[in-house]
Image (cartoon, rainbow, N blue to C red; front, side, top):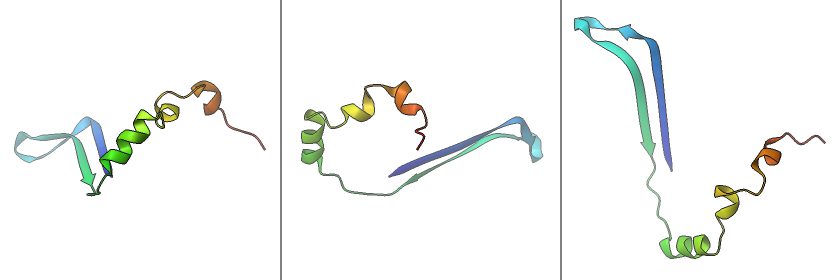
Length: 66
């Protein structure tokens, strides 16, 4: 798992000694193992197509009323 966060300040914060803080960021990673062979098989079988290339993204983004 990888999490990336950032914030940009406009106007920047004035710090001492002539420095300014214009933005901050962070990166968090949790080490996990991956079954590469299984991942390759699933990608080759088209398992990621519905995520990467959905059939109708505009229609799917509309809220569903019950």
